[in-house]
Length: 351
Image (cartoon, rainbow, N blue to C red):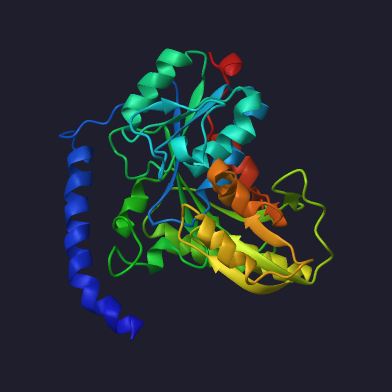
């Protein structure tokens, strides 16, 4: 049935792809203008709608840039926020005012002096960064692969191993935001959410498929490294040893996290699964209590935690044993060395 529906929707996908192809062509020939910036722009994006692992890869990139001596900034659209226009994140903001992913970045990197700006029009966000933080040496663009009005210095394209762009279709028949040929704009492709022991033969097969669309881009592979669970609030005790547990998510692809918890020995008795960027409501958390029994931990993600800490939910989460599972991206084989060679040199190293 799903296969039949895909083919029934295909004419609409062809129409959508054609419109986007014309738009991209107008940028390619210069009839629509792309704006650069005074410092390098590193874009982390994808062809597919949601769930390719942009947030941990942006975090990896920012941490690496800091390690090298850069003064990075992050620019995001700020999806799901209740504000408009360019905005520099500050300590009085929240997931509601800047978006869940930018607020997660703020919590991770504010202490290191990394400015976080959100703007629907990335050009305006860059101007705000230039005005407020002239000291920055590089900007990481979160999810701007289709935002052609700015021109990245390095285009990093992410695609999932189990849902690669070359095996997908354009919306609405598939999940691609644009045609597969858009991969040709990539300077490097990272295949995400791979098992840490991915065989070289499978890497070679995937690389060959990717190279059909991105002929010269290096193809790297990454996996997720999960950290130790930490309590959402300081009053929550450590989680019990692996047994029964609940899972609460509002992200596009929660499958890898569930697989990880089950590999530790947890039995997920109930998974409260909501759409990406979901704004949790008190009634939903009350309903979650109906599936919970004393002693069962409730696991969630760092991204979801930014929304669960909304003051409006304080009463609803009170006394719930909520635990955050942090996640980091880790490049396989010689991927770290290859990606480092593509990054711009820090200011002290420039001629």
